[in-house]
Image 1 (tube, rainbow, N blue to C red):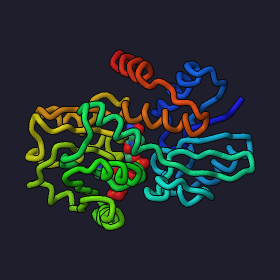
Image 2 (image 1 turned 60 degrees about the vertical axis):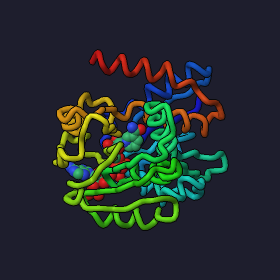
Image 3 (image 1 turned 180 degrees about the vertical axis):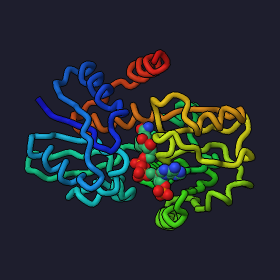
Image 4 (image 1 turned 90 degrees about the vertical axis):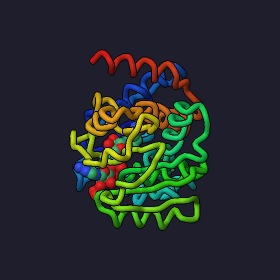
Length: 274
Ligand code: NDP
């Protein structure tokens, strides 16, 4: 039986094992998919051990996506652009291939919501970690009117804006400079919601036409979505992105596209009832 895992720190919250088990059932593939907690300074050691035990593939989550990009031997085009990896395939010859499916996952979920492409939208992306890096290229290829990236540590946002400047209209700004911004979509790609922390963003950013998207999922109404809800903005969590990026990883490993609709529907119902 093929072995898979999702690796991160923290990791208990991850729904990836549940999703991959459902895809496997749907497609008749036998597999085992577990959660692996890696120490913050022990990512490579944890993955080497998993590979030696016969691991076939892993998903990578916070905070290891950039470290994973440095560790694999081969990067797909989209992972090389992102310099962040969320999916690794351990080839039979031992070679590690890194890919990034976060961008496909987010864009599929957002276009499903809007029932249209994202061209002409003004997008604000909060955060400059591995998840943000993975979605910048795919978001810019949707041809938004503008993409602003803002991060607690502003230098990281500036570096990302510079490195993606050839792909589309991107700029970076400090958290405190957001006050006068006008956006159609605000995406929280920070891990603040995982720690139940507030971002202290200006209320002037919001109105009932703004979509606030928290990449975090399964945490109920996160502080970011509470803030959005209080200003009557539209709220969406990252469950749809999670299921879509998982489907793309599944395709990389098994060459079969699972049906995401029933899985997303089932998880949404399950989380509402918790
Ligand atoms: P990283 O650890 O690589 O990056 C974390 C980011 O969050 C950094 O930009 C960091 O800023 C910022 N941050 C952390 N805490 C705070 C805080 N208290 N206030 C403001 N900013 C903060 O994580 P990832 O990029 O890999 O993941 C980010 C989040 O996205 C995670 O919660 C993850 O679960 C979620 N995610 C969801 C996916 C889905 O499918 N739904 C897919 C991918 C990710 P700084 O640089 O200043 O430290």
